[in-house]
Image 1 (cartoon, one colour):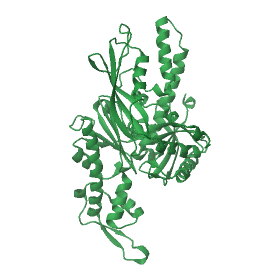
Image 2 (cartoon, one colour):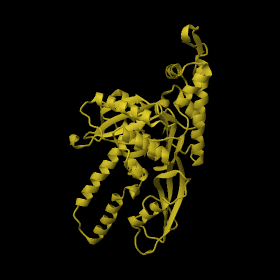
Image 3 (cartoon, rainbow, N blue to C red):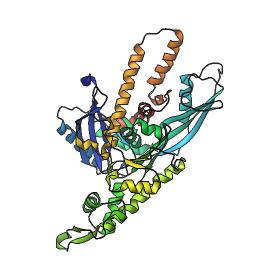
Image 4 (cartoon, one colour):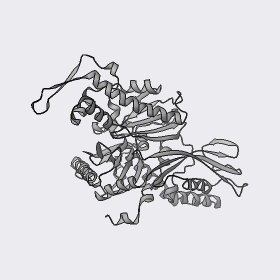
Length: 457
């Protein structure tokens, strides 16, 4: 059975690193890592591709390293993460008045509700990436997870809409395609990271997933099994490194090394009498750096990032201890010493580090357990979600029909599944991870394809 499963590749184009991971599910539903490659990223800033040529070189290096880890791999298609401070989210409301009020609510009416949200006004140059239904209402009945089968005059829903800049999305698309790969789909990075580090209990208890990357900090907030909010905060580990470089007058490489080896997110925890000796440039005297000063710089920037986290939680009214699962920190920046304590102090919520090993098979590469690979592993999980839905659809089509009612319902369901853009509507209670993954829309890439893009290949 294992060999029948496809190999799916996640490509995480970050500000500091580009990672390519190839994985396949085993018979227990866990991911076996078949190939892994990474490269330093040069053409990306704050999660956005600015220099396409440099990004292509970095992607190709990551791919070469991936092939070096497993020469038998063949990579053609990839799932790519998207972030950047151009990503925004908003809440909308949609209602329709039904014509045939005597009949039960059908799948097509739910589709119509979602389609209407694509007409929401957004600024010029932006594009709606995803429309995720949260909860439905039928007449006076609130918080219905599944309106199908109900009857009523008016059906409505609250929606979470995610938007992004068209050019930023196109730059990612072009970089990957010019590297000789096909973009299977683009997935919002905070949602990919959330899928990799969350379990069923987290989704039910309510959590804020905070992915601290190199250029951005991505955030996804879940409450009562529903995605309530997404945000991209335009600060990350790179900002801390630059602050150290400027504040202490050292080289960027030295600043990064000090941050990783001696850095702490709490100045009170740093020893006041400890010093780091930095070799002098071109024969100059060595420099003595206070560990306490280093921690003060890191704490200032990290507190700012956590203030943004609190601000976003306040925006959706979830800042006052309503998230029983607390804050789950992931991404490369989450490995800073004492960050959990600082997060708990600033947000007032419990915090823990989210590792992507929840879905990994035994005997995987140890490196994969690091939080910095959460997004990439989440992208593979999203790829498997699409594949499994496709297999289920084929099986469903092959099912024998028993009665007329069953046929019309099946046609409606098949139509829904076949329209990539509407595939996010699910009609079961959105309380588990499978259904959360379903809600991340497939086929996003098609929205941004233009005739001009075809000529690039």
